[in-house]
Image (tube, rainbow, N blue to C red):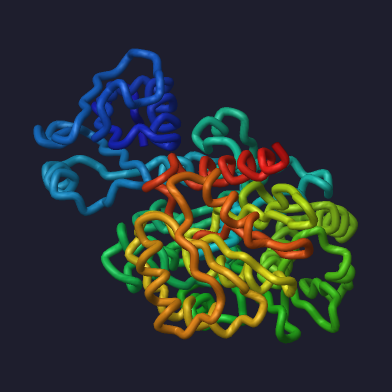
Length: 449
């Protein structure tokens, strides 16, 4: 793609849109940015481009542009985009531009939950092995910003969402696929489209590439016939060619079986993180990490913020922040990480998800003594829990996080766990999941006062 002197429309000015904008301006493009927010709601940015904002931001259409660069939250099948493409515009995205121009080897990680943890752990394994590695994308550095620094000997680890993958035209050298359940049905047409988007991470691979698939689930296993790459597996249930858990030990089996160490020594909580670890160690080894580097990274990595993060302790009660859990699967994984009595905080804004199965499983858990429900879907979750026969307390949360934590502290006893793992988006009460998690941590800190 040559952008010098070309007319380029950038749709959406979030983090990735800003990355696209700066890259395009540096490469001599004539840029117009379109965003449905009003100008004063956007982050401060330098001039040098046209700006169209507000609810009717695409009303004038996109005819006349050479390229249309969509941000991840923008569907590629918007009528205005389709009309522009029909008139000769090339539809692309920051991730497509990056894949075309990146000289380094790319390791891409996708799945419903655990992408950030797995990608970060791969990066840490490579870094501990002395490799020149970059963590980029949804976590780490914006990737187009990296292009001017990268060489053929570098490695880039990308966390890749379905929003990015839906119209990608290349696949990474090493693809890593975690479990895929159901998410983002407020954006995707259905689960089938969601899974098909994820499949693009392997669809364009060659015989020189590698893929690491989570063997313990049906959907990632279905990716194997869709790639030309050499397939490796990860499992916490059986021995495989790749990475697995056997008798409480992490085993790496890429060239030959090598024991990495005991799961008892991990700082990461929960068996769901064992899945992330066996995937990450296998991918890191395929990318050139040493066994010593892998061991060092695996047993010193304590996880990412807002993922089962210990927020504090008050009168013998431990508070865990798992605000990143925005669907039932990671919430259930978090609940399964604890055996002590649990007070669970659930709810938030809707993503079109079904909570009946989660409610049934929570009702069967003996250690969940109370559930505090909040936000837009709180009432739905309460109803599903009642229908499932949940025997513990069901408590309406409050109008803010401080009230919710106060309610939790009043019913908790020494030795209990209070867990924020909402299983919903955050936009009804908070800016985003990070804001929700930070407010949780702040409210916990203020309990003593």
